[in-house]
Image 1: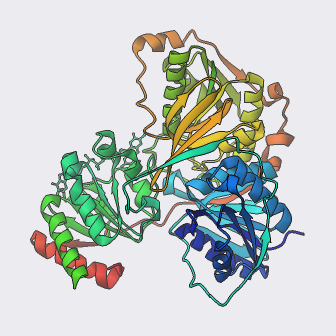
Image 2 (image 1 turned 135 degrees about the vertical axis):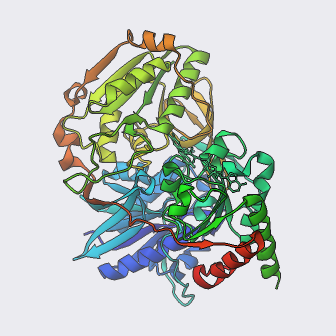
Image 3 (image 1 turned 90 degrees about the vertical axis):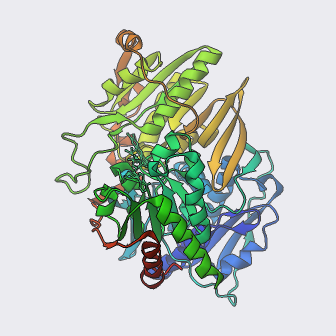
Length: 327
Length: 261
Ligand SMILES: Cc1cc2nc3c(=O)[nH]c(=O)nc-3n(C[C@H](O)[C@H](O)[C@H](O)COP(=O)(O)OP(=O)(O)OC[C@H]3O[C@@H](n4cnc5c(N)ncnc54)[C@H](O)[C@@H]3O)c2cc1C
């Protein structure tokens, strides 16, 4: 019989991702509502130390695949292990973070199991032991409530939405080794990882985002946006106009054809607020708009509106944030 | 080289979504459909690959009446043939059913490489290409921003958090295109005229040996119970004064109300 919640606990370079703590915490909450145990699966090489950490977040069993061919992510290698963990644990629910890795792996595994997968879930609900989830569609222009037709129910969780619980370091788990059969080289091999600028926070993981639009006038001014983002400890985003003009890389684009983000704070500087941009950021908790046009549509949804020239307001803001942080 | 590209019809991105009377789908009347924006990168890459290596590009789309027009557009943008898979009997909002149908169609076509957009701008599932790869037993590389195809092999760069993963694998393979992979071309008038003469056929489930029992609502992995619009956001407070005052007033709001500083 299907039993419990299994979380794919993503690690990179021997450390869990922030989204993994969120998925483990939400997994623990669901497990409690279902009155069933939480388990976790950790995949990689020389990652045994992470089993204990998964236990601190509530996992009572941790499946560990600690084998050399899995040192780097591969869809087929990781899929084999996750399927093995699912066959062993027989969970009623499988969760994974909706990260680059989770979004690559989960549909592959769901297809192998012939079950439905709900992507990028932002809400979960258990009623009479049945799980339903809510997920954004059309980049957040609508929200769909879905149920699962077969077991296990499988979902990826959008980063930054589910709160991570405080770890309980007194908890321990039974550790089970799996994945020993993964001896062959994976079909697709990661040969290299080219890191982006060090210390930069990824948009989808950031709780503060400062975005620049065409109002910044040219690539030479993007530093204004980056500086404010750095001062606030956040990430720098952009509208499509800025990306299409080649002022910043497309990995910064927020919107329906960019990243959908839900930070606590979104500061839009020189962005008019086109529907495609709003689609990607309107689920932010608080929105600040800085725009010199009082009629800009972005003001219709902003919690705080500053009608002004971003070239004057943004540097002042950066300066004051820095002063505050120093004190 | 035999290259296929899968294309999805989605509502134009500036569409205001309205919920249909059934409460779990969108109102489709008055909605203009376009090729899903990421599929444009997929199509462009497919055509460039043909231009450099020779071969043919087959565009494939599953859907209703909105599809043939968009497939004509794909032909104008350089595809050689197009196949419209009629949606009759298929749970088109279920990624598993869509993936199984496309996999069956692709199995019959035996391409060397299949392109998809990294996700369809609509259902936002980001699943179908991986499901297809799984059902065909082929490798997948998703969120691809750079691609080099060699003899029976490929090397791709894919976007991950804070960096780029370089992946090497074998053909046949499934690729999910991300913005940045290329600059899609606009069709010229001449190619629009030529496209009218290129073959566009409609196929049904039975042509792939499938029935509604395999890919219809009963075979779906998920059921949508309800669709709702997000609560409307209201305009909040205007902060006035000179730039220094505006900055400090915003900052105190960020401290006391937003509580992020
Ligand atoms: C298929 C499709 C997909 C799209 N996807 C996206 C998407 O994912 N993301 C996205 O963002 N857009 C997307 N768009 C584009 C979108 O429609 C808009 O064109 C775009 O968002 C506009 O960017 P912007 O607000 O930066 O520029 P503009 O609309 O040009 O606005 C610039 C703003 O800056 C203000 N400004 C100028 N100077 C100053 C100053 N000194 N100080 C303060 N304010 C100033 C102006 O008042 C204006 O409001 C998409 C469009 C299409 C057709």
